[in-house]
Length: 67
Image 1: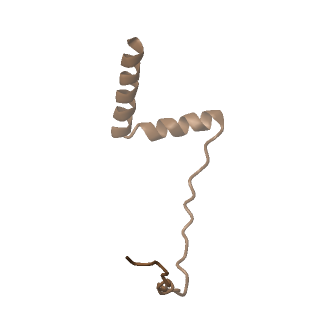
Image 2: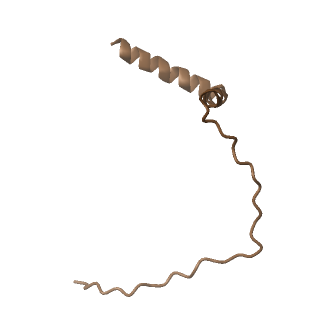
């Protein structure tokens, strides 16, 4: 029965940390500690100089037999 209460406490602790914006910095620090953290990609991408509209929908030839 104590496993149930342990899981309930863990869920409440994680939700509380996420609500108070403490979860992400703690998780990033943990990733840095074990060597998995990479900086997020903040590259600004340019919009293409042209726009290619999607192709028009082509009606498929239906060979269904209607009864």
